[in-house]
Image (cartoon, rainbow, N blue to C red; front, side, top):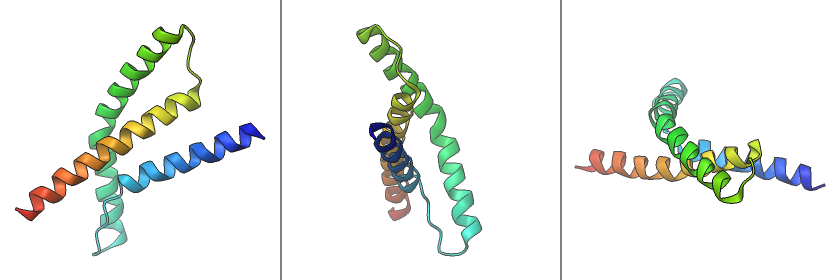
Length: 96
């Protein structure tokens, strides 16, 4: 039962990650998809780098290798944080 619960919560974290990186464009669905894909591609290198740093720090401190789902959760969490601040800066620049 705990494996199902872990997979469901991982799926929810991935959905929230995609929601935070969604860039809605009222003109068309294609523009929304394109803007979201650009957002994901622009932030992915930073998120991957930070995930590697955090995961390696956690592995060194615990002395054991992290499971893939824990690394995916770290990636999504960092992606949510970076996506949120990137969206804030993007909307702030549009308001000026």
